[in-house]
Length: 188
Image 1 (cartoon, one colour):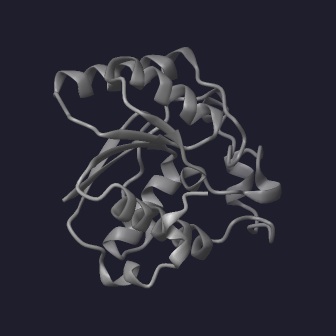
Image 2 (tube, one colour; image 1 turned 60 degrees about the vertical axis):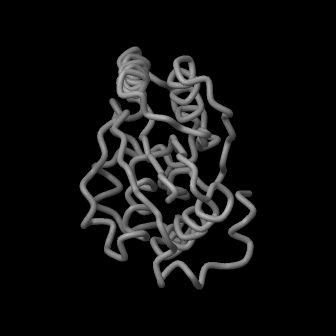
């Protein structure tokens, strides 16, 4: 059985300002660094055994992963598949403005996010089969991974808090993932 633990990065200045970060690097707040340290301490205290840690290559996730890894000492690999949704020209826009506007054409579509999530799950299953993986990512994309695995809508998955972790046990690839592309083996 493959165990995937999805964690969201710590709070950022951009979270506090309520803007769409998308592919922006993001800057952890003091609270965000504390959240990452608290998650690290919980994982260490729970004696959760991980084989590897993957992280989005966006700075807010990398910073969170490094804080967590201070206590776990795992092999740490950046994984571009874990990036947050690309909001296109909405990147950096206040959430309140974005909610009342039409999604720009240059934003990553929900379908594209689902395809990327399916590639990530297939990658985890094939490359880290029977291992335990801690993956540090982003709220919306982590929910997309869970929705792709559960074969449901993103809105059916509860929002993730900063530095929250969720577990998916993968004993086989669900039918909706078996048709994922051959390039799932490459995490690029």
